[in-house]
Image 1 (tube, rainbow, N blue to C red):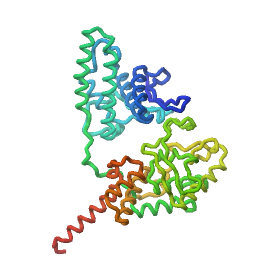
Image 2 (cartoon, rainbow, N blue to C red):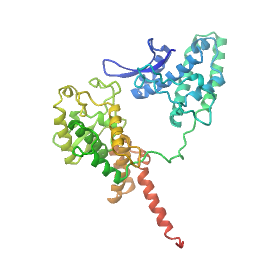
Image 3 (tube, rainbow, N blue to C red):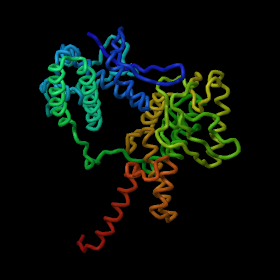
Image 4 (cartoon, rainbow, N blue to C red):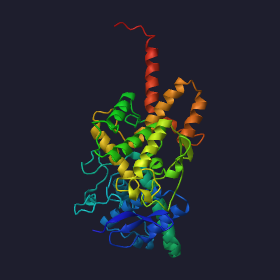
Length: 416
């Protein structure tokens, strides 16, 4: 079976891009043209890769359904409404090997068997894991954009009658597809990610301290590095991409500060999935004790010969700069070492936790709402008018809401 995958590439100047490839074959020409339009508009490499994985899903379905899409378009015909509904159904399920990043090299395939796909069912089969509603909606929007692009790409080369037919059919069917894009509800907030409780924070820091007998890692360098990772995430609220992007030159020599710098397509970064900050550049001030811990780790890092070949603060024991997947593995190790935490711990939970702690400190300092919002946006690298704080302060807001609600209930005279 022909298998399509999203493949990351890196140019000599460091720029990252993605192409849709057939395994053992050439990239899909039309998909390459479509993805190039994202590149020329300056979209992030990771965004382009998400688009590419969506196209891989589409082309796998076309292959399984035995649809030669280009030949059909060249005949003035478009996809039919029933075919569109099947594509919408397929787009709501995961396929773990759409990207070369996760594609298995073993003989055991993880490809979803599209012969078993039917119209949407109320009960999901165990081997068909659904994606989130927002993810499903994003996929469908990219599919709409691509199919519209293909119709516009083919139509100018057709005779007038076929051109008119193709454009009319594509408009009608794409309207049907647009109507299938799910609405992402803002009311279903139960289960959304929250920060850690103070008790869980203390337990976490105690377990991963380099001298802790319960520390899940054996070697000293790894213990020190992973402890520093958690401390920096808790202390600053930065994203894992920002953390992995820190270079030694970003550390201030005479001040307890470090810079968060945007370095898209950095040529010295050999990681194919380049960690990149999503927010504004900024300077973060640290407690002197935390900054000393950073410099202590820098000294340990310099003892690794291979690590001295790149400028990034965080390196593996073998030398290369840490990647996203390593951070994910570190937090998986922590979860196993800290069973019973109230939340599903991840690096991004540290960001939520920082924002909860920031709200508590702002309240203790009696900052006005306007001053607190401006200070938070500056520290997190958000725009001045950003409302992102609402996403990251759920635990704090819920606690304050409970406190106020209980105060209101005190006025009710209910006998025991």
